[in-house]
Amino acid sequence: MYKEAKRPAWAEINLMNLEHNIKCVRDKVGPNKEIFGIIKADGYGHGAFETSEVLKENGVTSFGVATLHEAISLREKGVTGEIITLGLTPSMYASEIVKYDFTPVVGLYENALAISEEAKKAGKTVHGLVAVDTGMGRIGLRPSEQDAISEVKKISQLENFKIKGLMSHFSTADAADKSYAEEQAKKFAEFHEEVKKAGIDISFCTLANSAAIMEMPNTYYDAVRPGIMLYGQYPSDEVDRTQMLLKPVMSVKANIVHLKKVAAGESVSYARSFIAERESLIATLTLGYADGFPRPYSRAAKVIINGAFAPIAGNICMDQCMVDVTDVPNVKAGDEVIIMGSDGKNTISAEDIATATGTINYEIVCAFGQRLPKVYIK
Ligand SMILES: *Cc1c(COP(=O)(O)O)cnc(C)c1O
Image (spheres, rainbow, N blue to C red):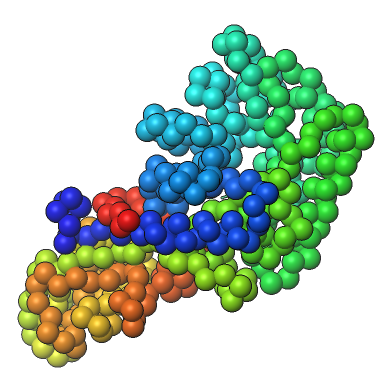
């Protein structure tokens, strides 16, 4: 139990493991590539500011977030490095980009124009990335469209908006079959060639996410953009894990706050979703689906207590859940429970929870990061 957590349930964030993972990325891409540390969604639930500090200590000076809102919050906490807003920022917020010196991502001339005009008013120049949609189908100029090159040309001629570089994002780099990802990489390279042929001077390019860092070294260009791998999670179960031992940064733990015997036939949780088949010992934890412990996991869910697995009893509630600890040795109130993590012998990974609930490890760590207090281990 940690007094500073103010709650007997917490996400433990191991910053040594974060450092280990950053070093894995550095070893993989070599000394000459820039690393944009992707810390959107509060550092995938791990705490964006704390993550940025460890990244900075390890030579990372550029950070990627999703939204203007996230970017402002990091600046206000004192992050001085480059902050890239990876999503589109509507033109009505152009003045904020200028004010805080962010690096926006644009996919339209009008958006870049609005930013340029605000920058001019402030006597500044904004450096932004131009997004190219090579097959993700999310944001960016589409190379197949007639005016894509002229759009880049117009952006490049703006007075107070300078193009820092071109970027694109993979849809399937984490799949075993790399054919679509290679096609995207090819489209990106071709578009870059066309841009150069049109006399537009853009040398800087960035394309690779975690999966591409692991398996597509031909896509590193000038800067790579690792997200999930920094947090010690693999981008999918199809990537080759043997090349790199990533260490999970987040564990989720709680203490038993209440322990009781229930008789056979008595029920536990909403909808009487657990009915004791024998006299049982039931422990209560102060952690629920509002903390990222997914309600659809209730039936499959287990936790680790005193070296043994124990099943969740009944539906996970919003802020609490119950555990059937009848078969756990020496169990008592106050005992520490591992919801996600390892005791050295038994492990419950983010992927285990994701697989049981039909989602991906990304969503599990993001969700656990939202309300649980974070305890940082250095
Ligand atoms: C989220 C994101 C990344 C990082 O992706 P991972 O799969 O977590 O490595 C990189 N680039 C962009 C544009 C993103 O949105």
